[in-house]
Length: 324
Image (cartoon, rainbow, N blue to C red; front, side, top):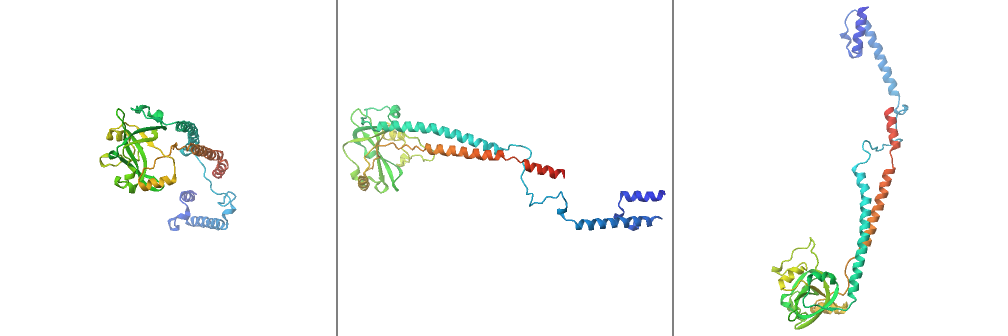
């Protein structure tokens, strides 16, 4: 009996069907061979039974067609994308509110300038304080003196009605005890760049110039620097031009009544075309308000749609699959 149990013990640790029959030695080799035959028949029946079954016969099997895959968030509930999406409507709403304030400021500023335009022109004082020019921006003034064409400066290129040209800036030398100021006489075409081609546009003697007293502009980062030593000016740098010509940093833009026929005649003769006496400030803040508030509304709807979709059903299916 002990030998039979020892054989069964060895077969329990190492399956008999994995051992060659020749390795089983001893007087009980016939019993080992019989056990091997029984296990072999069981394996064949199991394989035959498994080959006849389909995957759909298993009640725990889920079809990909009936149960499509779904993305389920695990771990953190709020990622950086959702936080960024939550900040966009807040920031855009704040920018829209800021544009409302800007619209009110720009409207009042334009109204103030237009009120100055309807007033009668003032004579320019003998000496102008540059620090108070901002308080008289867009104020109509007039001054009498002699244009220094020998110190003329061309700012350009400047486009007008699709044509390339320049702005003509000429110092106006006034009488005894009065300062010299800079006058932007208007636009000329590029073909009239040389003074010899526009003798008609170079008035001699004493003249009276009427225009708008303007505050100096600020240069943006995209405009190149002026090259006064080469006679190239890309931006009306009032301080630089005044120092170059010995004038006060006072800028007057000569005006004229808009007239198409007169503009064509001036262009042909090389006479600078002055600007109309009007406020040319852009007021696009209404569009900005609509844009920022529209962005705030759209991103708020997107955020609400994302938050309200909770993966309860998908999570339930995943848990059922794990339990199976």
